[in-house]
Picture 1: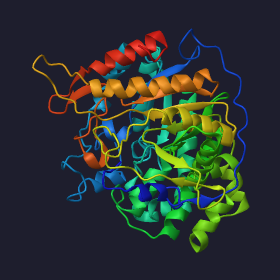
Picture 2 (picture 1 turned 30 degrees about the vertical axis):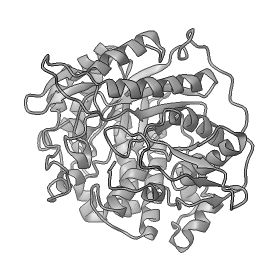
Picture 3 (picture 1 turned 45 degrees about the vertical axis):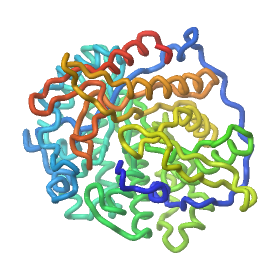
Picture 4 (picture 1 turned 90 degrees about the vertical axis):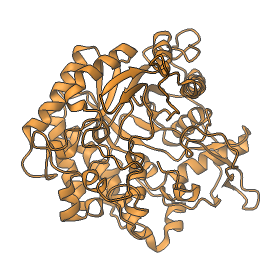
Length: 487
């Protein structure tokens, strides 16, 4: 995310205003019964993992028939990337994947979330597939399984084939959605003999608004709200078509769901009125994507606010969009606090963010450990899901290599200890969070920040490609070993 983006702009990711919105208060239902826990820890069989994405780590952008992605073009526009770097080389994961899998195993993780580069498998987005591209992911999956690590595959993490952007306008066209469904079918048919869990699109809100609205991500466009709402609808349609493709072409038992950087609306004060207000805010500020996926309808408040800029859609499309999913992936980082709107009757109001509000190395990453307690709890109640995975959570840090060659990232440890304690609180109360993927396994190409922002448990020297465990890697290893946040 960009430090240049305001709170109001974040709210627009959902297509709604950051101002208060009236909506009827609804009583929260009781949480489901808690699943068996380890004494003083997380549930038994809680899934611990870590994550990366294709463009951020793979490199090898011109090897073995890979086509160009929108990020390959975007990073070459002067001034778009903070440090002037790109993902051409990144972490060389394409050639060092065995070494990186050894790091995952060293942590004790039982799952690894990675993404398939669409243009590596279909260089032009559609047409003839590239066998060498798929071969890489087959080797990756086989090596993961060999090391006792479960592969969790993401179909799309922002590297849209440039050919589709040039020919169709990318996500502006519903034809891209259909092509994405075909791509999903191909991957499902060829990989779900070993891959049992599939995420569809990662962070639709981010790549739509940042890429097509304010132009700070690829493809760098600045379109009006009416087009953004249609693009967001198209991304939801692409998700639904991918779910249907997985159902039709994957091995029986394959699970599928979204991974979304949810607008993290939480109560400023833990009172029944403010909790209800935060729940309504969570539903409405995620109405343009998650809510329509989970319910098959746009809320009245969303359509009223959008007005003439509302997306055009059919009932048949809503049915596709709301194809049943097996789990809900939530990327959770910074909070936005809400209270009941005192001047608007039964509604909600976001509180302003004070300049002194604590944040991590990235200005946008405000510290709010309770976010990872409240958001899954409210989401489970709103959308009645019985399986939530934290598909991303983590922090950049002020990581310095000391004279002894080590990285003592106590800031990241502080962040993780507090967030995981709140997540443990949620699971103890019966919130159906089944697993956690820490972002990220290792430092990587962090989009508009280039190589300047380091989110990894392992430090990467991008000149030598040497991976060095940070102190937080030991912390996370202990958390996993004890299945408890108090490690």
